[in-house]
Length: 359
Image (tube, rainbow, N blue to C red):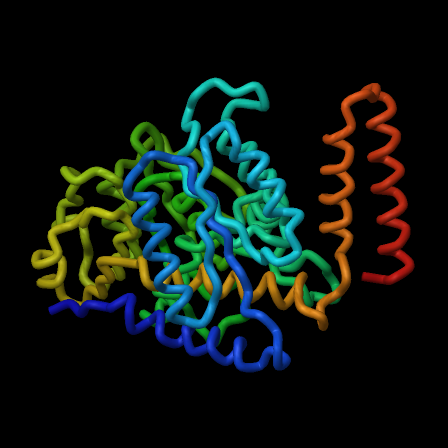
């Protein structure tokens, strides 16, 4: 028979870590504040915002929802970025979806990149995305004091796998999934792709299965798998993660091998729970929401400690560059050459400062 892992129990360790962090703050220090920007009519987003508010307040953190029209999201983001009392920002997507955008292929992607790295609790801005896909874990190497922020749901899966003893703690960091084969169904940019990269960065072979393609994430490279099927990938995997957001989807339980760890990240159950728990040695986690919220809280506390507390550095090179580029974007009367020279000068100046500081 298989066993069931409860996200609520796994989340307790991290909630205790958050409470310890809050009690360590100097007297008179306000708890970190997360601002949620809600501009979608999707009732599920409003429900998630309300759930987040209740969880944060229960754990001693502050949360505020700022509701606006879609056209005003960018200005709301700018205001939150510049507000010193705001320590983290979350935007409830989708807002524009695939609607054609003046600023690129996706206005939602543009908005993600507009969030300051010092306030991006979801770890989805350009700074954190590129760090993840390059397997860069700190922003300030070699000091290694400022850890990169990782996407909350993908990180929650990693923490669940750690709780299930899938990670081998006897191996060095970055190799603790070595020898493991993983299949992730659904290559979304929010969960599936970053999770595949995270597990591959830890040494696993990861099959990423989507509606029209299968890729193998291995050692920082992406390999197309023309000869594989979803079934063949799942059958050879000791870890399976499914995130298909469709109620009708059910993975055949006969694909799951004895001893497999199965994590369901979709809002719908992607597998027959009774059938999978009847398989010998299976470990099953059917919901990840409470661990995801704990990771959101943890990311907020990390940003507060790294960027906003009195003990943190005043402003990092990354944050200075972000602020300066924001100033450049506001200038309306400039030439392309002038902007190029201005930004180049900023970067060279900052690189020189970094060399002097021997970071």
